[in-house]
Amino acid sequence: MTTPPRVVIADDQALVRTGFRMILAAEGIEVAAEANDGLAAVDAVRRTRPDVVLMDIRMPELDGLEATRRILASGGDSAPRVIILTTFDLDRYVYAALSAGASGFLLKDVSPEHLISAVRMVQSGDALLAPAITRRLVARFARREDAPLPAGQDQAAQHRGLATLTARESEVLRLIARGLSNAELAAHLHLSEATVKTHVARILAKLGLRDRVQAVVLAYETGLVAPGHSADE
Image (cartoon, rainbow, N blue to C red; front, side):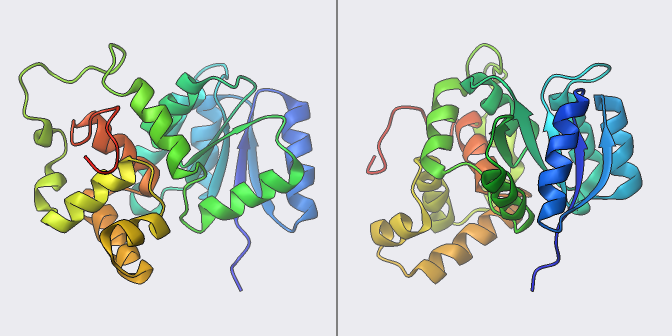
């Protein structure tokens, strides 16, 4: 049986924190700490070492995106999974959250059932967003003026791990970035799902990524995949 996740809730609204804590507690999920600003969130994670952080995107002292970057940068392999919370259903926030290293994104009016499912999902190592949704978001915003790549620099140099991928692993990464699920990858490549899962696991390990969402972001931002192409290209 999977151990229930320990969670830190970071939000500057006390009512939001209270509501989430009650929902989580009702399912036997421990809230290790609460924080009302980004700096307090970083400190709470350092002190309590939770499995999952529910992180408001807009907070005083330090916003949720920068707090996420600091938490993940200092946590190494033991860093928690971060779910970004916002009241704004705007794609640009989703992309910013994923680029910061978050494993998922939720609106604050999420249902209790969805909140619990999301926390458990990211604890298990899965990404919260469906591959096709992630692809749409990254394709829309990757390599725009808000995140330019250095002019004239080799795209692969943006992440040295890309050079360590085999030809098959590079092909799988491109297809992941197109939004294909494991089942679709298996059908497209005429492989078993077990083999596909092995390829995905090796790709994530070689690139030092937490989940396939981060792999999608990397594929677009390094130019390995360009927005607008189909899986067959």
